[in-house]
Image (cartoon, rainbow, N blue to C red; front, side, top):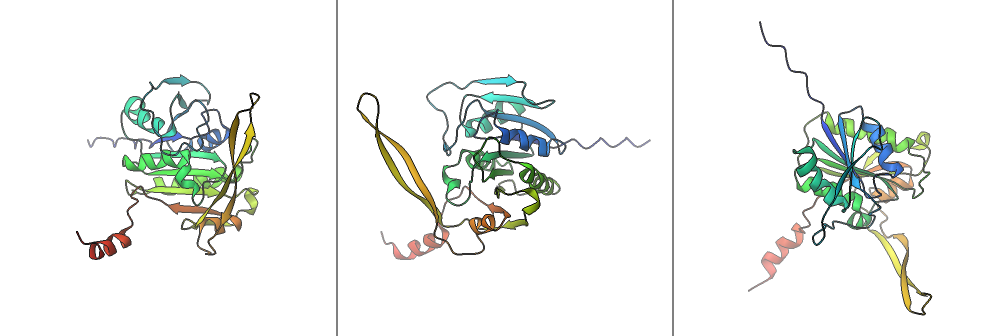
Length: 262
């Protein structure tokens, strides 16, 4: 008699973020995807926004099992979002997950924000380690933000990514507009807009009379294209931007190969 086919194992979904393990965004992401596979959460024990791709070198890292989400294995880490991905693979999963999800971030990670974002750096680290990954962000900084639209579209996107074999270095930067779920028009695959913060440092004095500085700035879009993430979000679309860790400018590389003489 032929052997019964072994039931297909559920995909392992690693979830992390940069807002910390107790942030509403990560809870909403887990809620969105918990039926799609075996979810394991490894996230910072405190907010790590703006950490970029930082890793912990000169200090010990600590991992602690916590019980914050029903029926979901959850760990908090004393390090950065990138540390969380590294430790999750090596010390918790003892294997590469089938996909790594980062977020849902409280605040935008469109355009140049991808460079500074701890959320996206965690996703990019997974991509470097040959784990398909997605970073999710909602254009709302509030801890009371409405994540219903983000949940709906996060689940749809992850379902599609898990339904077929993906390139092992796939990394998507997904941003959700800050509107009611009923007002989201759909999903657009975009390019990263040329936009940045025009920054200033507000100079203040502490109680001892010494100067200190507080970074301020205004986000400005210099890109008039209608195929960008900024345009899509302004028009109530979910933006999806494929990103990569290879920063080589291949066009300039070809030019320099012919122009530079040594």
